[in-house]
Image (cartoon, one colour):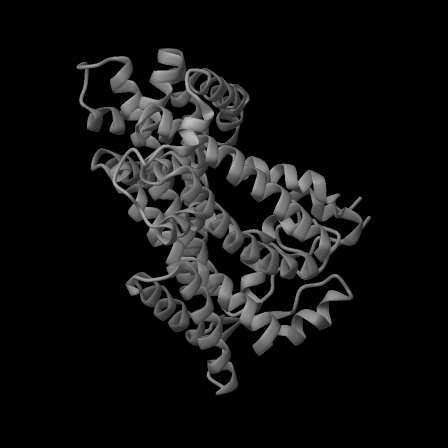
Length: 440
């Protein structure tokens, strides 16, 4: 038995004898996509698009996501490394990889605020006039913060209750609402709300799962081959995007609303609202938990300062709750658009470094045969951080085409050019703390 398996090979390569069948990983990928946020994304797009336009937005957005997941995922599969470890030798260095983790953590606090806002609207609908939505937002956020502060045990107990309830919600809502409408009419009906372009919708679809695409190595390091990475990505993402996303589109057309609360109320009433609340509880505890871990790791790596997990959880929980009270749910589209241009350059840099520039590829190749990690990693790689910033800003400013695609391609080009000009160099060196996979 591999002793490193006790901590899921957090600081080492996943050995070949610990790799899994692709279908089981595809199921996990589907579970990642088929969440309440995907339901909300589908409703948001459906409110501003016809069904046919929404299909194209989901198709193009899914293609972008799957290309990123497959390429980054194949790197993770080859090396058997988690995203945080892999990033050290694919352009970012030790501190740069912690910055990537920090960016992911910040995005998760945004998701925390959005999910808290959904539950606050649900609570206000359950008990109208008792408290304003912003107060419910704070109370709900504080409740989740208390659960996460307790730790993993409380989160597991919550998951055992809420995950089945969410699946019931999706099936019940779809069956109940759509049974009262003609499917042909919903498919042919115009957008219920202000219209959105297919390209804008594509960016929103890509932004909805782009963080998951960047950290795809955390899953694919358990794949047995590159072909398995492609199969599990196409199956898991396509099913999740189209089944859950397009269900949200149809429900938005049926209810003439982009609000999850309004959709659920019109289909299954107050029972559905209770399930929405418990479902967002489950999603939100992991948003806060993962964000906390990202910030703790960043502070330790960048500044050598060890933050207390519980204290950090409380601070971030308060911040997320304030975002919810301030109305971040109303900025959902803008939030996803921002994610869609900030995160693709991370994948672009990793791909360009691994396949084109190959500054640190020899160290990975040399250590792979023995199952070890390279003995050292660069601490900083300034060129990568500059390319990341430029690509994200350009992607944000571009108003035509698909911004997420432009930011991705630009990062690959800029990093490759920097590599050819000899500008990709590390500053400082960090010794690797765990170098081998020990097998009993």
